[in-house]
Every structure is written in C-alpha cells, then in structure tokens.
Image (cartoon, rainbow, N blue to C red; front, side, top):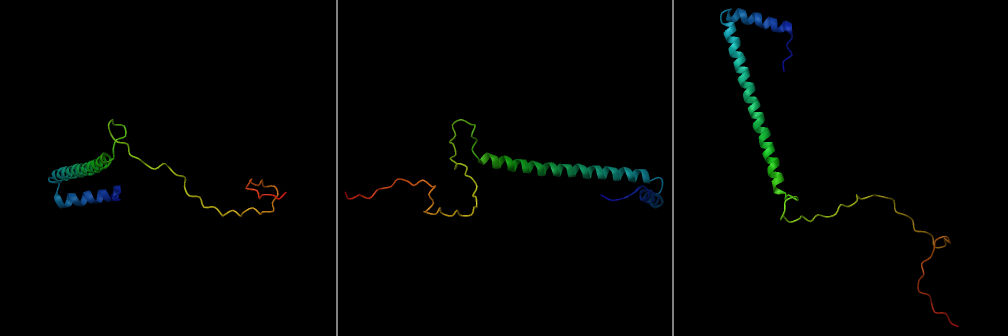
Length: 113
C-alpha cells in the first residue's frame, strides 16, 4: 500500500496529537480502527460474492455438457483424434531407369508365336 516508514509514522502521530489533543486521540484511533475493520470485512464479502458467481458460472457451464458416467444418457459422438498436419517437402519421383526398385507385375502384352 503506502510506503510509510517508522520516522514518517512518528511525524504523523505527533501532528495528530497536536491537532486533536491528548484526550480525543485514543477515541479517534479506535474509530479509525473500527472503520478499517468494517471496510476489510465488506471487501472480503465482495470478494466472496465474486468468487461465488465464478463458481456458479463454471457449474452452469459444466451442467450443459452431458455427464458420461450417468446411466441412461446418450453418448456424444466425437470425431476420433487426428494427427497434426505435418509440412514436409515433396518427394521426387524415382527415375524409371533405376534397376534396384522392384516393378509391380502388370498386364503383359500378348506375344506372337
């Protein structure tokens, strides 16, 4: 919050003692403490309500999806997982005069004979 050191705090207390007086300073500090406590309590309540709203939204979001463990529900059909696209350089076709590649048997032309 504020970067107030012990020397600055002492100066503030001395000024408050001079302005308010020694009789009213304890009562004023009690009121200030109560006000800060009430402020923090309200701040915590608001944080709790915001977190509660977040949880409700998450529960409502999850309630929209069917529960696969409950009996009697229909199963949701999903696409099977697919592999990610891989970008590769295109391969060059093997040359036809390469003798080491086995050739597939194909239809043979009739021979005269």
